[in-house]
Length: 398
Image 1 (cartoon, rainbow, N blue to C red):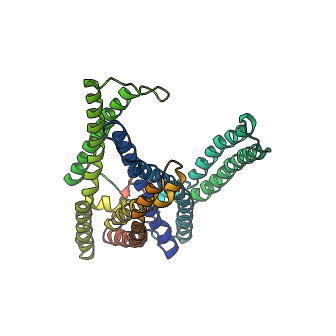
Image 2 (tube, rainbow, N blue to C red; image 1 turned 90 degrees about the vertical axis):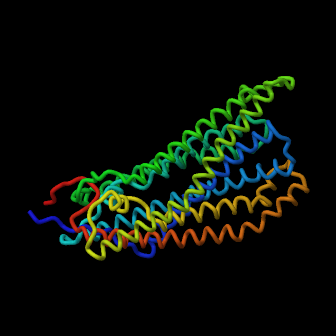
């Protein structure tokens, strides 16, 4: 039985750094889309129930939803391809290392991820095609329009594509599982048993409070909506301007505020969090270089979580996509037939936001790539200072 080997993260080349860094861009697109969706939903209903909004505001809200659909769809496709590419490159790197018996072992966190196949997104596309195919075919069969069988053929084609996607997902998954089984299991290292820092507990408390406020706001908000319109197909209820009208307006307004304020506070807390994380990383790296590092909860967090640069990349891309979605409204509003020429001309004022938005997205991608490289280097320094330590389950290696 050989002695335990040292631990070292997998190497990160330019292609892998790009693929891993791109995750912050797609993640930022999803977060920005979610923020815009919530804001549009809340402000749209508040404006309809409690205030009289000008037509340009209504046109802008509809245009924003168009931007959300475009950004979300593009990000889903990019993330599907990106995730597959990143995980395949990491698996190849692990196979090359496993071919060298005396090479350092792969950290537990990375080894466990290698056993999870990256083709789950294909299943999402397959199930989407399962639903879309029959619906498209039925359009040709039951609608009053003459599509000359085109919709029927398209529906059959989409359904057959779904069958092919299921088969492809199964074949790729079996191949991935066979390759991953040839790698050593995620063993070695010390058990992560350190108590979490007080700062992490406080952050979790703030997240919990924000989540509670969001839930409470949603309940209050939709209580007002249901009082106005009890069901989707129901006609709006007119209470004749009595006190119930004031209650509805108050519920919708207060609920909207309870939803929007926690989101704003969480966004504002990002900067202090980034500063604290960066300071902690510098201290850890300095201690590792001076051979004064000891296992702790902070070390555990740095071996498993994202670094300050990665969080900064997320912030930049979220901000960038918010600007892009808003700046694209002069084009996305064109899909709204009810928008007038004056509304379209007014939304042109947002077009200059596109340039800084794309610049922030590009900067976020660059910072995300740098974050991947920096995180790998910092974790390697930690493992050099603590060669037999890893965050995982203690086990003997043979």
